[in-house]
Structure formats: C-alpha cells, structure tokens
Length: 483
Image 1 (cartoon, rainbow, N blue to C red):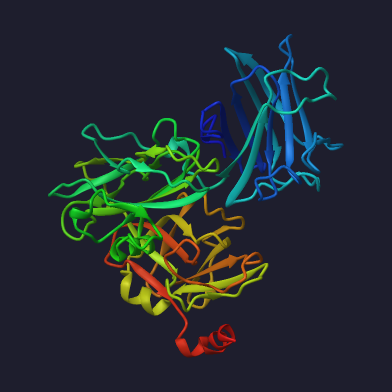
Image 2: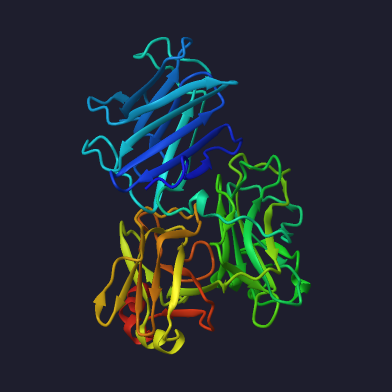
C-alpha cells in the first residue's frame, strides 16, 4: 500500500537535474512514478530489458505545452531511434505541469500490464533509462532527439520507505571516512581501496546512518562505494592503492571478502538503519577499522582527477534497543569455486547449513531485515532460499538482474525470523560467454564471489556461515582445466 505520497526517491543523474519519486500499491498491483526534470521540453522515462540500453525498452515520453496541457505517450524501442507508439496505452497520466523551469509528470501503470511490449515491474535490480530535450515536440508525432540521456539501476520494491527512516538522535555526531586525495587512475575502470578508522570511541555507541560523500565535480567518476569491516591497526588509516595491485597489503585486500557495513551506488542515498536498531562501535568485539572500495569510472582517461570521496558516519551514545549484526552466508571465497569459460549461464550454490545455525543461533532466533548480495563482474542473478525441518519456506530474496555497479542493502518488507536448525541456500548465476579462461573464487575483481551479507538483530557471536566443496569432488574439473 502507499505509505506516503512519494514513498521512495532517487536522482537519475549526477547533476540532480532528473529526479524520480515512486510508490507502489500491492492491493491493485500498481506503481506510481513522478519525474521532475529541469527542462521545459519533453522528458522520457523507460524500463530497459536489464541492459541499461535503449533497444527493447518500455518507454514513456511526455511534456507540457505552452497552454499548460500535459501529454504522455506509451512507446517501445526497437532500436536507437524514435520509440514506436504503442497501440496499447498502459500508462495513465495523473498530472503534469511546468514551474520554474522544471517539468513534473506523474503517471501510473500495472506491475504487469499484459502487453508484451511492456516490461514487467519485478523485485531486484531494475535498469531504468532517461532522456530529455530542452524543447517541446513540434507535434505529438514528431519527437526530436534527446539533448541529455542516461541510465540508472534502482530497486523499485526493496528500498526503505522514507516514512520508515527514523529521525537522528539529538546527540548525533559525524565521522568522515575519506579517500586521501587519490589521483584517479587514467583508465576506464578501476577499483581503489582505502583503509579508514571508524569513529574512535571507548564506550559503546550506535551507528544509525551512513551517507555518501562524493567530491564535488567527481559525480560522474565515482560510480559506487562499499564499506567493509576490517581487522587492522589504525596505523593503516589513509593507506590507499589499487585494490588488485601488489601494493595492497594482503590483510587490507582480504577485507573485501569480509563483512559489509554499507554500500552506495550512483544516484543512491544514505543507508539508514531501522528504528530501535544500531550498528555497534566501541566497546568489546566491535569494529574499529574499515576498508572503502571505490569504483572509479574514467572513460575519457583523464589524468588530472583527484578524489576524496567516502562516507559520513552518523553515530550516537543513545543506544537503541538492539545491536545490528551481519552474517556472511554463501560460498566460501576459495579457488575451489570454479566457473568454466564460454558459458551463457552457470550457477554456484553455497549454504548456511542447519548444523551451523544449530550451534550459532540462540533458541529465541534472530530477526532478518535486509540483505546485501555480492558477486563480481560475471554475476548476473542471485537467489536466497530458506529451509526449516526439511521444508522450503517463502523465498528470502531474489535479484534476477544483478548489477555489480549497483550494490545497496535489499530491505525486506516483512522481517524474517531465523531459528537454530534453519538453513539458507544462496545460488549465484554467472555469465562467462566473453571469457576464454576459467574464473575462480577470489578477492580480485576478475575473480568471483557468491556471498549474501545478512543484516539482522539482535547481534550474536556468529559471523560466517558458508560452505565450499571438498577438493576431491573438484578433481575432475581441475583435471579438465589442466588439459
């Protein structure tokens, strides 16, 4: 159901010129979108077939004319040309107006319209495309080419609603974890790792919010960031290097396979923890150090970009009701996880088995409120299944269209209870059609992982619950690799 007029919102571009609000209603399976674009011309909004590209996309184009009349057209793209007018107009215009140089359109559609030219709105990652022109069309049948365009991955169904985000406590303090004036490598894609101190407090505090900080002017370069827990000394604070380079110490590099605190991607917003929960720092056995992985996107191969992006950590000594914990589930990060080359689809499954949860989870259970799925570049889909007493329970979470460059917490609409003796299976699908060598499990970006960081409360002494095959079971595949 709608909880607020605009339940969720993101910026579609780095300049904040194209803003998207949306809400959904499960009673009638409809989603309502509002786009606010800094133009007095036409605006376009589309759902891409999980590629982020125009061909095959489900698109609407709208504008407000000089008389204040709003238009909306349901179209579909067969290529990189003007999308074709759809004979079945399945988007309903709710309102439209221009004010202060901004065009605002609100429209609604069914999750599944039944029209084969419309894409189904589904859980997990949805790749949206956007465009706009500075002028209105001369007539409804003559839409000039866009002046600006782009793409954005979002999670339409499993983002925390604005109404559920609690206010910050009155004594909230801020601590910045930043890259130390990194010269961005002069190559298209790079992954940079930075060692950072978490807030240095002697008594227990709670982190309640983590917000991204992107260096002004670098909004188009900083693509995504992930903050990992790390067991390291503060003397490594500020140390930075290419994550996969020989200069990165092993103990910092290996933190990328450890527990995650927060993630952010282009256009994303702050991570806000649920009311009455907080991520514990200070005191015994709580993290004091972290590693930030930053994905830089430098397609123009510029040599003069300096970056100090990172995270703003909001923390308080007003402890909330429960500590947040993170359990790493899935497949152990090991070279025994092998994915053959030239595969359109190959899946790997890791388990959090019942004998582990029987020992690690108390009889009162834990409350799961979110997931952070994680593979590397070959990963295309993940699915987490929940079992109890030999029976499969409702699906925990699934992302059919995983995007490595869009990693954020997947919030559950309804929290799930996990008890001792339960088990979880995590299945990861990979595509290696363009690779000519085997891919193995490992920390490097070209290696692979199959992990699910499970966010829950109350925190217990149970951090990892993963499996890997025995070496002897992998011998046939190892022999094949050697031939």
